[in-house]
Image (tube, rainbow, N blue to C red; front, top):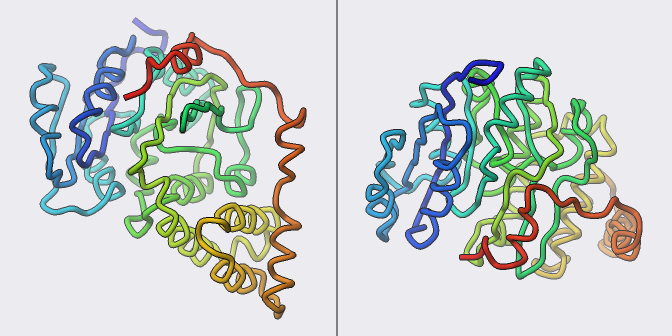
Length: 313
């Protein structure tokens, strides 16, 4: 028995065409040291055998829901939230892995610190390289301004009380950055506590929406338009948007970014000067490669397993 009792947790996984890898994600949840949860898997009209793979896993805690049509990950998460029974909600993705103590650690910190929502750090694995997110050191409360000016929280890092996620749903218009949009709104109302332990491995798939540059730009546009009022009074948030647009320059072409960056800034500038403004705001690559940040952390053996291939498909 944990000090805070064992409240029911609803773990929500949206999925679409993940027949080859979803079982790894599911078992990383089923193998948690914290046992009192329901695992809600919302299938977004997969055209492969994803649902059959899930139904073959014999565990009474698994609940399978099927969307009436393909509606996207945000809609799938919202349905999971609507049908959840737990007093606490956690999110997982169908291609990522949890450390076995994720729920135990985050729920413990949630109660101990009287927080509303917790988020952990994560290791992001892509093309054989690993980076740790976010660039924050030390557990503790994270203030609203920092949460709103930096996209530092991915959905699968979150564990919090159900009323938070039922009051603020995922915006189903967003093909990307739905987690950032959600956190911006949640931070206005609720207290976030950061657990500085890499309890999630984010495995970036080649077909992942994370790598879809067109959807990335669409989402950025929505984000900027939705929070124009906040950014008008928040230069840090505006600069972060600039940097993210510039980051995708090579894949998406500068013409769109120039036009949109100038529109965001409200500046009447030529294309060339807008590009120079964007580049001036870009993070210095040499500084990032040097000693500007603390060295990567190593926790619970996760990094060694990732590098040895244990987390690969």
